[in-house]
Figure 1 (cartoon, helix red, strand yellow):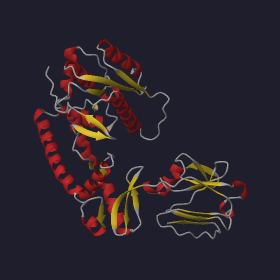
Figure 2 (cartoon, rainbow, N blue to C red):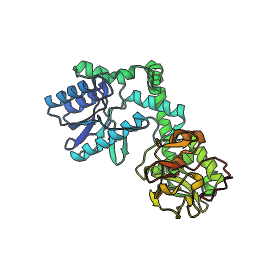
Figure 3 (tube, rainbow, N blue to C red):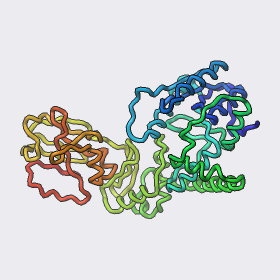
Length: 406
């Protein structure tokens, strides 16, 4: 069976193949091997399924039989927090980059196919998320790593037929057969039921949207890295969206920006001269001196405070010179540590303890503030004071201990 490959591989260079042992990646691996492309296989074992070790050993055996270099990342023992899929994607691509550098390869080759393109586009439309590419791009750079997707013009069924006809070993991830995840639901209830005409229509729509995005990106880049506030407020949300994404990509940061978030940014900047929003852990967007710009975030550093001292940064002023006993900060607590709390740190509220992250949710604290809100810790490492956040806050407490949020 003939497969469509849209990338012109250089026979003299090496390429890393991201291989899960699923039918798509095995079709890609075998196709490139038969074309005598110089490949290295990179596999990640998440130990999430009973067959994870079987898949790793089977893939390793396939590679050994063909003298293909095999690299594996075993995630056992690696801790993760938050969304597993996001964490897995981050460590996966960090691993791919290391393998590419080790073998001086061109980049990593991934087995996304036409069904993935359609699924991704439908999810983008549903969530109203804008990215630099509608669907999936054939070639991108991720954290300086070249990512190549040469199989985007093949249906998933084409790749499955290929491995069956070639008698190539593979494994099916049973979690992909359920509708538990939104992507799976779109795959099984919409994409798999599309006729050839339906697929052609949606692919044409994706191509047309990409032409529009290309034009929008050109306009966004022409705005430069700083925009006058008057001009910024005249831009529609789509153009602001384009501008933010282009600015981040120039810093090798690739992330979707929703229109809802863009509208929050625009409303905030319209109303407040000193507001800023977090876009990533390292960059934010702010209004300053009648201009709007993307800036590198400076997270407040951890500092030590002795009794009777003051502390000030661009975000907060704290004055301990008059004491702080009425805020439950006593002589035995010094020296104090002032730092951004961990979301899982616990803070006493009345006669019970609550995680910081839950307090922030209860307080409806904006995400960008959670990364810089400071807590006060005793010398024993206990969180003893956390300033209360309210959207419209007037401090009526007659304390001699003063905190001013700028």
